[in-house]
Image 1 (cartoon, rainbow, N blue to C red):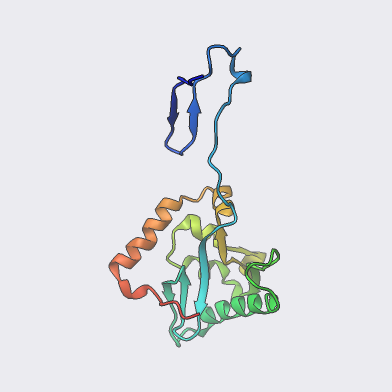
Image 2 (cartoon, rainbow, N blue to C red):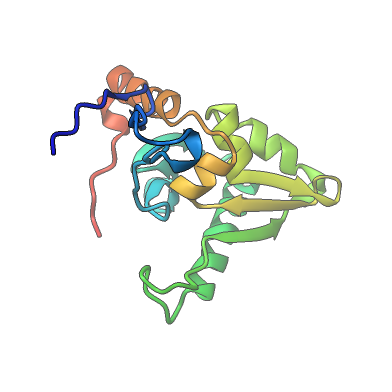
Length: 178
């Protein structure tokens, strides 16, 4: 039997099918067929390279630190040292691999550290948060598809921002050395 029903896709990639005339209403139709993909895939990874004093997202330098201001740099050193200790005996494939941590900031300046990073606000809101009146900085170093969808992150705009950074200065890309 040939299926002559009309099929179409919307802008999100969802497939729609017109119900068969033999069916009695919407209750017996197939409805919307959603595409499936792994929600735990990493979209953005925040790292810090001590050798070149740069904060990186997906190996693209977003912030350089100078020796004159060691306080801000020390915050990120503390964050990644804490994560390294928490994941000492784990691999990145373990289900309990730690990607979120918190660190105390001098002089209640967590919001200043967050606002000085020149990244799009929606991504910054996912990766950084402060509490206790700016004394504690919470850092999420890995943004997954699940986390991006929950926080309504515009992935296309964020990817364009990273691409624009590379277009302006291709030297921002740090080569993979691990």
